[in-house]
Length: 228
Ligand SMILES: [Mg+2]
Image (cartoon, rainbow, N blue to C red; front, side, top):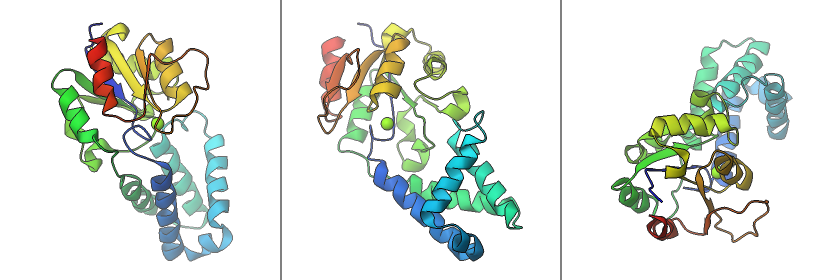
C-alpha cells in the first residue's frame, strides 16, 4: 500500500471528550446565570440543553455546523430576553475555551510528529475543537469540519473534501477514528483504509470490520509500518 496521507478524528481519538464537553456546558451555564440570571431561573441546566437541542432540530440545514448552530441558538435565546447578539459571541467563547481544554492521550504529539515526517496529516472532525487552540495545529496539513465541508461524518462529502485537501486517492489514505459508523463505516464507504481507535476493547458492533484496530495511539505506527 502506498500511503500518502493519514487523517485523524479528534474527539475520543486524540483525547477523551465526554468530561471536557460536560465541563464546557457547565461553565457556559455558570456564565449565563451570572450575566442573565433570569434565563437561568427559567431554564434549569438540563432544561437549557433540551432547549438547545430543540432549536437545533428546527434548523436542520445548519445543525451539522455545531459552532454556527450554537451561536444561532444562543442569539435567539438571548433575543427572547431582550439581549443583543454580541452577548452570544461572548457566551460561545466561554463554551469554546473550555471545550478546547482537553488532555491529549499519551503519545499524541510523538505519534503525530513521527507520522508527519512521512505522510501528510489531516483531521476530519464532526465537532468544533480547534487543533491550533489545543496546541497541536502545526502537526496538521489540513483540518476538515462540517462547517467547511458542508456535511458531517459519515456523509461521503466530508471524506471527499478531505481527499481533495490531501490531493490523494482514497486507496492511499488511512482514516483513524473511534466511531464505528461515522469514522470506520463512513471512511470505508469512500474507499479509505480504516483504523478503529478502540481504547476500551469493545467488541466490534458493525458489519464490515475495520482494516485494523488499536487500543492506544502508539500502536498506530506499527499498523502503518506493516501496511507501507
Ligand atoms: Mg470521535
